[in-house]
Image (cartoon, rainbow, N blue to C red; front, side, top):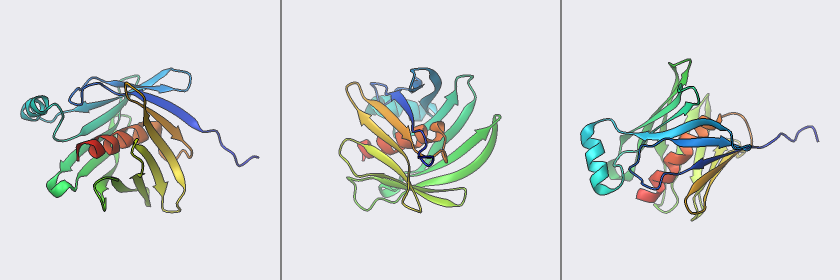
Length: 184
């Protein structure tokens, strides 16, 4: 019984509009706000085009804690032939720390699969279900975390099984998986 660790649960309420940059609060299991996830644009042209289309062309996301400190920033850099790539930067004390690349390695368009290497381990983000359930799986086939999209309005329910990734990383990367899956 000592091996069983407590599963951490969090909720994010999605914005109604895909092009919205309003911060989405990250709530813990007691409904306490622990931070925010938000989309952002790199240029005014990107913002105008996103508003005209009703959705962004590139998905850039960042998470902040309740003090306004950026914890993770993911910037989509490539979108050729539907093989996206994001440059991800983790921040510690407002300094850029770990950097890595998240790549689209999907075989078919319906089930988006993203992958990245984090601290020497390969982590796969897979979505095999129509209701957008993203699972973070390490190279030992252990599930690190899971994010489910449910309800109307859409909300994301995050479960962290192993504390290898923090909730800010899981929130940003799971939303990338979700948004990338619905636009392609």
